[in-house]
Length: 200
DNA sequence: GAGAAGATCTCCT
DNA sequence: GGAGATCTTCTCA
Image 1: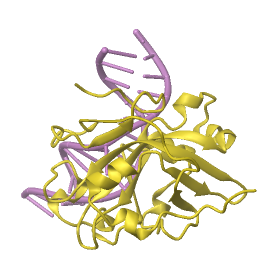
Image 2: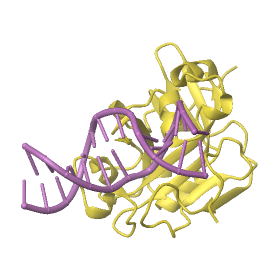
Image 3: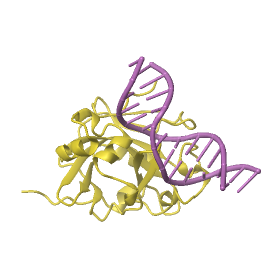
Image 4: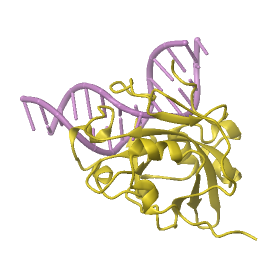
């Protein structure tokens, strides 16, 4: 029999961004569609903070785009970049304190056929091994910006069935110019779905 | 109102 | 391994 998945509570998100970025590894991302459920294990994440992090969208203060980062934790911050990619973030810290964890890579678990259709590829390793890829595979768009992840509907995180057993590692963040000296990228060591190898 | 940059991906050589 | 695609958002005049 299937246990009914319970969404991770607000308390999980309402903490230090770096802590959430580490602990989100191994958690299961659940995406409910009309006629199917997609699941993937988070194997890579990056922390983006506020005023002390020049790489963060919130570094220069609140704008229409990043407003969600300043709101209450436990909601999704989805933004559009490079003309055709969405990126999924989990808002952290307390209300009024900007912070978010970028979900960079997933290991597909359930609904793989649907992910393949969404991505228009048959290659498993290529389905969700990057922030733009996983949002497409999971049909996540800016419609989900501001979505409450603690309600347990449409899009949310759950604890894995079995306690995670893996080695985690950290490295510099990827794809940014400023703030790249900070080791705020966390990933599951040796997992083939991690988007890139660690920068030296 | 216009110009520039971007937390990326895919294709081509 | 390298460069283009593509469009939203922000900044400046």
